[in-house]
Image (tube, rainbow, N blue to C red; front, side):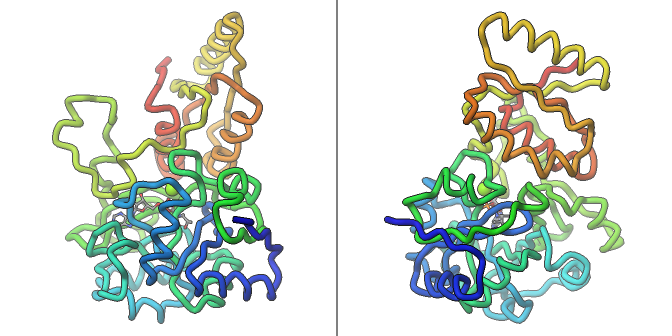
Length: 334
Ligand code: TXA
Ligand code: MG
């Protein structure tokens, strides 16, 4: 199939909206990462998203809306906490897990009776949703297992020839996927950390917000894994893995810099091509850069990527979640 490359114009957004309505697939920018969109209410269209990504079909998708009016058709209960959260953070980089209506096919939710909903702040994304006049189911627009794309060239690297169209929008300003917050239980629970942090959510709700226990575990620890059943099904799959071998170096700045330099030299003596990523603890910059950098270093055939750990709090915790996965939890403490 030939993939249309569409500059962002009114006419092309209309065209892309029409493709979605016809059951086709369109990749589009959001503020977090690029999404691979299909009509969320069309089970066949959603199935073709799984195929294009090479993704297991029990992994539920996030449904994107442009207007809170769209909630009425797809969500069966509005929990009290949702109202202040929408006021504070939508449109924006947070997804709420809510009880779904029958209008949302189980194919979209990976068989669950809940659905993840997000209203992106990116204007192109919202214009596409409006043009399609449908809620749009969209996972990140990467082949399953690879880093999420944060610019359209990275989308094309994975999807050219596999989908109907790509909207050639801007680079993503956040750079990591949305926070996923489950609002179907007693206590709001973060299933995936993102730009909107636990501290921000607690400030808004004036009450406790939890991390899903899976987020605080080391999945390479066999003891911890025995009774582990992740709530966000996406958590159990291999993620963000470049071809290069990623290692995280954790410790104070001077010690980590010294360790990275020594490691680099010893790897280079073994004829390995090595890259060092040090964001000087700037979590925002790290979020924006990390996924795109992994792909770039793969194109340069780098063998080993050494990454200086970020502060494990706030946005740093969210970016570390991605860094740890891309490293297969390979951490060197110094
Ligand atoms: O920023 C984002 O969220 C991007 C852009 C495109 O909006 N989308 C994205 O989608 O990251 P995806 O499919 O790559 O990740 C969706 C995550 C997965 O971890 C999935 O398990 C979780 O959200 N999720 C979705 N629906 C869920 C549900 N009903 N219950 C629990 N987890 C859910
Ligand atoms: Mg993804």
